[in-house]
Image 1 (cartoon, each protein chain N blue to C red):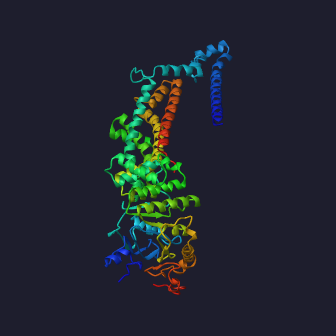
Image 2: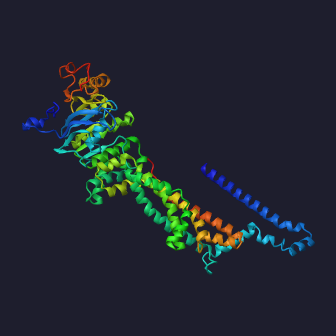
Image 3: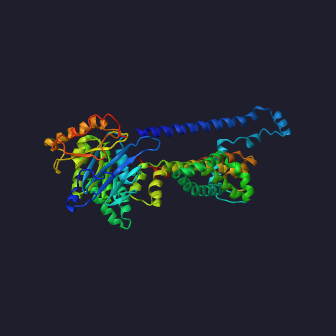
Length: 310
Length: 284
């Protein structure tokens, strides 16, 4: 017997009264690299609903990027399965757009042709005019109309990452995977692009899975934040529900009393509990917490586990 | 500022050229003036001994002026053809360029697809590596006897030698360029479900193009070095044969002229590839 569902019961499930999978379902995922004894992560279980924005936070080396690559179909897990929209994820697909850490634009193509490359991959039969229309729409969406015919080397870091986002959105994927897209940007640029991403996701009802190291970024963008314990044998230790309203913004967010409760919870986790829950001490089925609204959830969690659970 | 440096460099180049020309003039004049130091009796004696001091000037190293008139004569009539041993410099160059072009083109057609295969498949790389390592250091001219024996045509043997010498840099550079295409770009192609052919032509080829062009440039340089030696061996036509033929005629002016032409053409070929290289180079 295995516990498939996280405790967060989706609304669909209540409505239909039968076992309904969330839009994206990750089941007991594990990855062991050849030569290494312990798996990097194991028993990773979570689900993402349609239209949900989910962030994953954890220390370096816990396998966040590997999980994202497995979702993208670029890497294979050693154990476990991923289902999206009822079908198993077996390889890369145009249904899942990826924004890479280092933008991954092709430097010999202009912005227009970089995005057109993606658009033509998705709709090979489209005439050139239709492709260009789609390209211009998404370049406009990220506010780069002026730079459409420039090469990536003529763009700033923030602009490049915007092109990467436009390229991922332009193929209208069912799901968007972002691997720490703003890690290399300065704080001001990051803030602007975060606002843009929030607006675009709200407009398009895009389902998003994103890796981040930035607690504030997660609180601003995510509906649900997955907290990962440290590796080896890392797990998703907790699922934090963002209880702030969805129309939150960067400029006013910190006036909401909930903001600090969530933020403190996340920081506490990263500073102490991520380590305490490492090496498989986190539960296989992560707890769903609403910081400040639940009764103290930490009392239920093992505070200082003594033994490895084999 | 940069213009000023360019101008100074040009002036310096001109100065060096004139100095060299002056030294040449002085060196060749001394050989002639040695005859004047002799008394008429001594000169007559030397003539009797078959060592004409006056004639020494004609068969010796040419002066810049003699050189100049030879250059002018060749350049004014580059395309005449008066039989096997008397062809214009343009005709000879044409033969050489044709051989280099053919051998190089065939080598590119083999090396680039094969390099793709080696670069994309570690298995093929490991399997072919010993062959490449053994064949690469062989002097292309060492293949000549084998080529002459099997092909039985000196002209095609020349093309074969060009082929064999220009294949290695292109092969190795293509394989290296293809193998070191950034993983990110390949991941993008994979997530976009790009077909293998489209991936090869639109992602890997442009990504590896600067490295491939570097290989082609090196190959062309080697091919132009080798064609002269190859044509000296096989004879008949070409700039290498021209050099050898003029050496047999003891016409040093023609030999020097041919050397200059070989240098200038080699430089133009290199410039051409440098320009191509600039066209495909990208800034990351």
